[in-house]
Length: 428
Ligand code: PLP
Image (cartoon, rainbow, N blue to C red):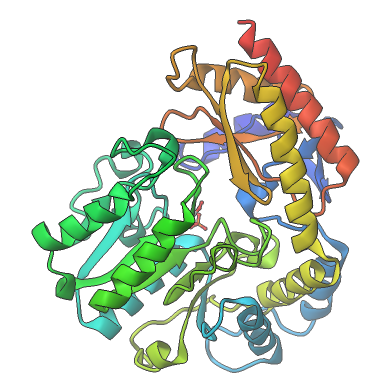
C-alpha cells in the first residue's frame, strides 16, 4: 500500500527528506510509473528533470548491466575506460572550447566546483548571482540560491562576497521596461553594481541559469545573455552557466548556451546527464582547467563508472534517436496548444519555455500569483494519472518536463488531463 510505505518513511526520515507526491512507485518504464497499488501515471516531472530519456531506458539498462559485473567504483584510485569515454563524449556535445571537465555527483556539487574553480583561477572572491536562482542546497551553492527565502532560513552566515542582481523576468520586469523597445535595465543595473557595490576586479564570476528553473521557468532574453557575455569579457569576469536543469537536451539543444549562441567560461551539468544515476560535471576551457592543480579539488564518488556507463548510453540515445529535434517539435506544439488554451482560461497568466522545459503560470483575475489553484491542479492531475510539479516563490507555476522520448499520444493525454484540471480549478 502507498500509505504503509509513506508511514514507514515518516518514521525513519526527517521531514527535510521530502517527496512531492503521496505515492510510492513499484516500477518505471519510459514516461510511465506504476505505484505499489497498481495505478499507472504519466510522469511529466521526469524525476525532477533528471530522466530526459525516461525511466529505465533500454540502452541505459544494457550499459549499466555490462558495467556492473566488471567494477562499480574506482574512488579516484585508478583510471578506467568508461569514465574517460564518458568525459570524451560529454565534451563532444558541450559548447565550443569547453572541453575539459571535473566529474562529481550532484548539481550542487558541480556548482561548488564552479565557484571554487572561478575563485582559484581568478584570485578574486566576488560572485554575482541572480534573484530567483536555484543553484543547490550545499552552503556554497545555497549562498547563490535565492528562489525562496525558506531555503536560506537559519543557515547564515553564508559565503561572503556574494551579490544578487534581479533576473530578467520580462513579464514582471523589475525595471518597468516595456516588452517592445526594452533598453535592458537589467544589464544597466549590473553595470551600476560594478560601479557602486563591488569593483569588477574583485568579481570572480557571474553565474546564471540561462533558463531560470526552480525560480519560475523563465528563459532569459537573448540580448541580456549576450550583454552579460560582453560585460564579463570587458572586466575579465568568468561567466558561469548553471545548466543543471536546462542542459542535456531539455531545451531542444544539448545546452541552452547553444540555443542562445552564447558560450560561458564554465558550465555546470547534472540531472539528465546519466538518466538518474548520480553524476555531474564542471566543464571549462583547457586553459582555465590547467590552472586548477591536483589537490585543489577532489572527490571519492565523482565519475563513478556505473553512472558514466549510463551517461554514455544517455548521450548516444539522444544523439542517435534524434531527440533534440523531437524535443523542439514537441515543445513548440505544446506551447501552441497551451497558449490557445490560455486564451479562454483567465487562470492561466502565462505559458513559456524552451523545448520541453515549459512553465504554466497560474494567476488570479488581478494577475497575482495563485499558488492555491496550482496546488489543486497538481492534486487533480495526480488523481487522473498525471505527475507534474510546481515552482516559483509562490508555487504557482506548473512545470512540464516530460522525457524527450514521450510519444505524441502520451503528451496529448497529459495535456488533456492538465487542461481538465486547470478548468476545474478555474471554476473554484
Ligand atoms: N542548479 C540548478 C539549475 C538546479 O535546478 C538544481 C536542482 O534542481 C541544482 C543546481 C542542484 O542540483 P542537485 O539537487 O542535484 O544538487
